[in-house]
Length: 144
Image (cartoon, rainbow, N blue to C red; front, side, top):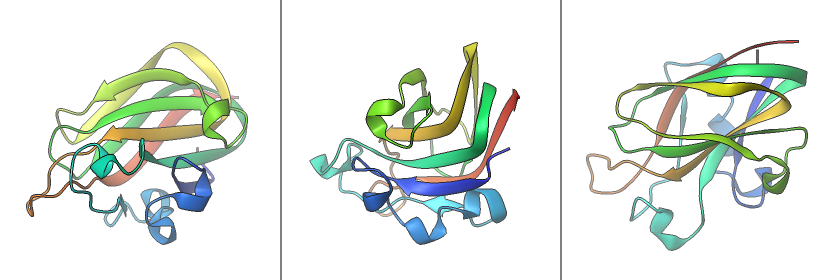
C-alpha cells in the first residue's frame, strides 16, 4: 500500500539515517533499510529517535502494520499516523518492543492517515557491540 519510504529523523526527512536506501523496504526487502551505528541503545544521547516515513499516496484507514526486522530483540518503536509528514503532526497510535524478527501492530481502532511513521526509540545491539537497526520489509493493511 505505501507508495514511498523515506528516512526520518527528529527534524523530518532532512536528518533521517541512510536516506539513500530507505526505499528498499518497499523495493528490495532482501536488502532493506539500516540505521546508522550508535554507541548506546538510545542513540548515544544524540537524538530522540530515528525512523521510516511511509507515504500512502492518499488518506486511507489503517488497521495493521507489519514489519520484518533483521535485528536481534530489543527494538522499541512508536507507530505514528497522520496527515502531514511532520513529527508533531503524527500522533502515537501504539508502541511495541520487538521480541522476534516479525512485528505485527494491529491498531485498537482503525485510523485515517496519509503518512505512517515507524519511529524507533531504542535500538538493539549488533555483533560489534554497537547499536543498529535493520528493517527488511513493511506491510500496511487497511482500506480506502
